[in-house]
Image (cartoon, rainbow, N blue to C red; front, top):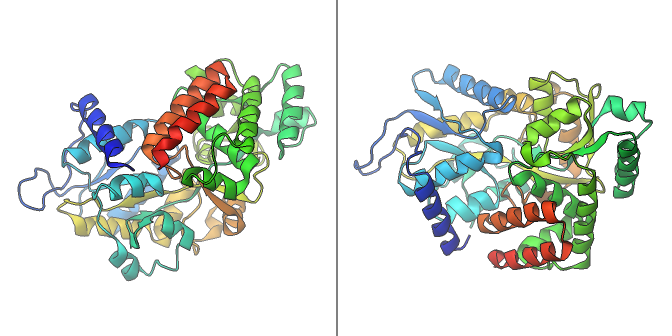
Length: 426
């Protein structure tokens, strides 16, 4: 991330959230910082499934280290919208939590690492024997200039289409794996008075999430990746085709989309008020843990149209901020988080799969088993909507452009906005 972008983000967050700083964590490397030695775990995991997974991870740590005081400092808000703003304010104010949730990729490397806010973890990886326990591509996502800066706790798949099994069975439909099949099914559902596609874009990232899956389907992993390096322009014919397809999909969404969040959209599918929803597999955790639905009975899943063999990867990670006084305790927590035991305590509840390649597959439901297998063979694509593919400055502009497009549906204006935003990538 460019220095000017970083500074502007921090200044904005500092002004808006100056009164919202959470309780101090253990800080201080020179004796002039305030705080305690409480192990503050900062995240945005407050919903069903994700909160359960975090609590299981914390309990595991407390069982191993009962003398280390720990605080669950989660901040509510989908995709970390609120938490990231609070975190930026705290980091700029020299008040870092002991460790915090951050997506691997650009969010970590072009943000906090580039700003010199993180300690390297090469020694921890060596001590724990992790260098061959996490996939190399995944370690690359949490590394910069040859150094490792965080520990992945999970893998989420972003390109999943969830569907209501009863609706599809009653209407004689198969889960769509191509865009043509999607539109054919959507038209039949619409004719029956059923909302084909649920969207909840009260928060800006959800519409971008849908759009990035269309981009992946139309471009494929290689060309999709070239967008973030500037090797492929946003006015390329394939991108324009993706924009037109996205626009057509928006013709089948619920009218109240702008007043709903992602859970609300998922609930429409669960209740049979909508047939399909495109969301990351944290939605499975929501379906199972909160709504008490059964995998492959109440709901089904397929990769989003034309992304078979491709995996939109989102990984939640935790690292060691510079300046905390309880670094040894943080490393103990990271060691638990990165262990087979820690990953298998967390992920079955969260709805994600383990980041490690040697986790116990028997602990996962059929969705988990299927996704673990897909992850081994699939071509990986970094998520834009969740901060892995490109800088925060670029993503902010894309979110704005996408949400204007959802309302106005002006394809030319949208492509022009994407091209303009691409200056943030250079």
